[in-house]
Length: 248
Length: 323
Image 1: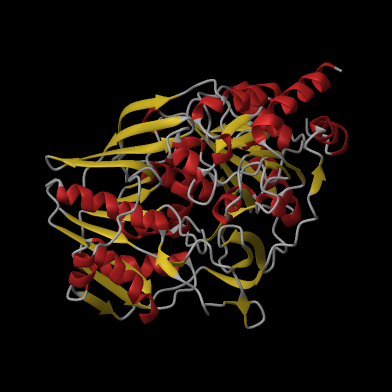
Image 2 (image 1 turned 180 degrees about the vertical axis):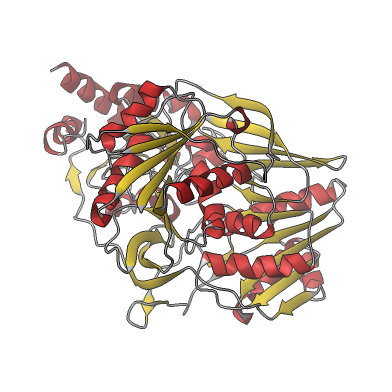
């Protein structure tokens, strides 16, 4: 089985967010970049299955981004992906990302394509579903469990109040939720050394449309100061919640 | 022209989320001077479909077809696409839950319709269609412009609320043509808890963090939640430690919620946690560290030992509920 994990290069989750050019552009200065957490968990699970001899022939990661995404892509190789593809573009919206990925995947298809359920930069939660539709492939969303045994794929997806166990034939697009792996893999020294010689192919982007654009960004308005209540007077908190906020 | 809403049903019943989606769509339909059409897929009784009229639906299209009991993303996308065409919809509204997230992107491609996900409010303008959504895990807001004739929006649950707008509602059976698509998702088993208030549905959420010290201390959280009719939640370290199930984890990589009241007990409020709860209308924090970031996000706070505060909190709630 050939498996592709689409990875997004995102600011570290503790980044202080700033904008430039009249609040139209995210300020990348001083930002630490990471593999989008859900993508990293998907990659971890697939590598665990590969190590367990589940019948995985190759694990590829694909990113849509500029050359500055390469340290993040190399990290995916250091964790254990066999090869990487970067589509050289600075995309405007999810549809453009999905279109660029779809065009590359059509030329070199995979049995399973995995995407994280959202990315922690633009939080669109859209690329995986769009990609599946562009490829005319089935998709399963909110996957919290993946197993491959004897060529069969078993999934669990999150539903309200529980999970559904699902079987699906390949090829399909899987959109991955937390739970698929406990902790992301951390690259070891050998992995980091090997990553330097693994193939990282750069593709020039196809012509892809956009459907939306961002007019501008704002920062959330500062909240009013927290009303502090004396720890020896918890009753006062409950009184305020009842009479002032009218919430209980 | 119309605004089309897709709402799922839960064992044949709608819930507050369905009515919220219809209320929201109705408000957009007013801006466009058009009507609200709702699509329901699955076996839902006439009386139940009728309820959607209370919130402004003028037409309900009901697909009651055995092939569509289980969610298959391709089959459902085909149905919604055909409904959108029949209703001549120019705006389509779905919930920003697992099902909406699974379907909206597919619809966006099928209908060449720009998509704005997880919105919390009405569009700022219709022409151009501009709507705000949170980005960078609630650390910023983006003003999204949708440039296509058909637009798709997913609404974050409990961000708009329900509003009654009684309309004369017409219920129609809708028979989509499914000859071009087959369901490929085979459901082997369903494991779910019924009867428990879902975290995403709850108006009040009581949440515990590492300050609760261990799973054996969750009795107090459950007692307070029961008294308030609240759901229980937790921070990431708590679910990672296995003190509570992953389904309770709220935060960046867990559930994003927007309850009316969020009570954070022994949670320091890491930026990733705040990203998941900052949509709450009111946040109460109890933490022994006066510099904990949760107090930056909180409306009411107590700097103190949660182990000592929680029993007094419970007692005070009992007292006020009795008065």
